[in-house]
Amino acid sequence: MPAEGSSRTTVLAIGGNALLRGGGSGHATIAEQFEAARHLAGPVAGLVRTGARVVVTHGNGPQVGFIKRRSDLVAEIAPELPHLDLDMCVADSQGSIGYILASGLSAALPPPARPVALLTHTVVDAADPAFTHPTKPIGTHYPRAEAERLAARHGWTVGEDAGRGWRRLVPSPAPRRIEEQAAIAALLAAGHVVIAGGGGGIPVVAAPDGSLRGVEAVVDKDATSALLATALGADELIITTSVDRIALGWGTPHQRPLDLLDAAEARRHLAAGQFPEGSMGPKVRAALDYLAAGGDSVLITSPAALGDALAGRTGTRIVRTPAPAKAADQRNAAAAET
Image 1 (cartoon, rainbow, N blue to C red):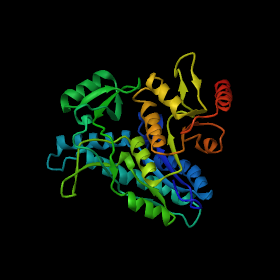
Image 2 (cartoon, one colour):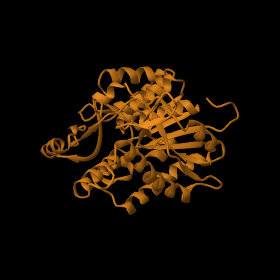
Image 3 (cartoon, one colour):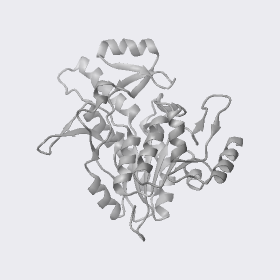
Image 4 (tube, rainbow, N blue to C red):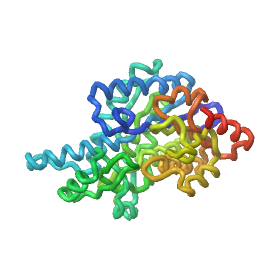
């Protein structure tokens, strides 16, 4: 954690779907993506006005799939053009999404704070078993028959994505180190709002001579955000998702939204299957990783509700130390009634 008297540091993780309509299944125009970024900028500017140092990370699940698909389609009609591997697609998405987010932030931030979008490499283990078991969904949602047709044509692995359709699946190795960590810390100290770790970071492996080599993967952005928050000694990690609060029994008649829980409770619910893979599971797991490494608090909410969540009016907060049972029961009971 930062030394006493220093500014608080917050890492805010924004999903790639936040810039797209239809939860990522629709294709927002560029103008619509800039407008979405302007809406996201308000709560970030609010954090900066409180004196917080802010790092914004972002997902790229839809966008990196679009870029990869575009490259594959072009290769069929113009084979002389360079084919883009996934590490190049992630780098491409960092540039475009970073530009869009920085544009939105530049108009909202109080002076002298300015946004800086930083190309970020995430070092992974070349022996990570994820490389032989692709699980990360990217790109467009397809009907099953169309997904299987494309898989046969392009050699993809495909699978169902949390009931929303079928998508391409790619390896998602665990992040081990963020190469630009020191640069991010220096930019924060200089008063900048830093956009970093886009799409989980460009996936690379380290050679014995210290050089980095890109690999075919997409790192989970929430896992990278938790690692970055730990490395920076951040006071808080905020993870946005498609709902205002996480819930037990999601999608059942017994669904119960949660307002406050401690790490032990979250771990039990995760083990019981309350937070499935492909939806809330990776976010809760990232929260637990950050808390286990010494973080104090994680806030999970939707981008639209971020302002209210920061004010304590909604959102799910997961804390490292056991939440006072009475207070947690009261808050979760109130949440279930709303």
